[in-house]
Image (cartoon, rainbow, N blue to C red; front, side, top):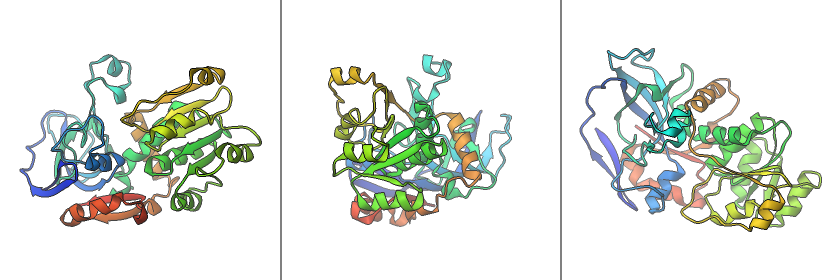
Amino acid sequence: MKTVILEKPGSLHLTETAPPAEPGPGEALVRVHRVGICGTDLHAYRGRQPFFSYPRILGHELGVEVVSVDPHTESSLRAGDYCAVEPYLNCGACSACRRGRMNCCSLLQVLGVHTDGGMRELITVPIEKLHRSETLPLEHLALVETLCIGAHAVDRADLAPELPTLVIGAGPIGLTAVAFARLAGADVAVMEIDENRMRFVQENLGVEHLIDGRGDVEAQLRAVFGGDLPLTVFDATGNARSMMNALGLIEQGGSVVFISLVQDDITFPDPEFHRRETTLISSRNATSADFARVVQTLETGAIDLAPWLTHSAPPETLTGEFPSWLQPENQVVKAMLHF
């Protein structure tokens, strides 16, 4: 079967591998139709992804079709069902799993990161990690995992209606935080340095408050929020300097949520941290409940994903096109591999 392998940084190859065996207990065999290209994939291509080893079959944002289900496992899934894949393989036994925090399992393996993922025609996955939809197209199912990252972060922040909120970074993960913060009723501003991204959030997500990160950010925020700073700030930049600066952009008693993951130390002045009585929150992956909720949200049409899908390629041309998706001038919002 066709398989795309990242052999080492900068070296992506299309090859043939043997198809997987029939599904075992608790498993389903699925055909991969769509693979969303994530920042994790781009970082791995550059050689900058934490907890990553080579060679690796990338791909954890998957829109799939069920081929077969283990006949000895009770399941409502049937051949032909379209599903999103929850790509987080947790142990089920550690303290985090026992407390229902499977997204931060101490032995967590993410498809396409810690173990081989979905850039191949067929893959076997646990049945419980499949989230079916009878209405969503495969392209949208492949974006469910991305949206879950933002949905989970917004839940972690416990946003209230009309809460002054800033999202820093309007890449794909930032967009998901914007979408779910707005659905929560928060008063959302978005900070960016890229004019194309600022235009995108204004035209496609209805964001009115745009903060130019190249200017006087504090003055712009106070102008937007009636003289105050935001009470919640999400950082989705993947930039350590931005993450550290975010701690100075909240109002007294405010919260900062780090969605990004970087290979750097994050430092800040403790007196300023305590003066604000800051709440600092990290957000990691998502839960099964997040996946179910995001699928349901998309089925209602609450988020229009069509403008997000800007680039795509089949496996035969992916290896040539992939490097261009790292270039800002190509204005990639979301790229996708289609088998």
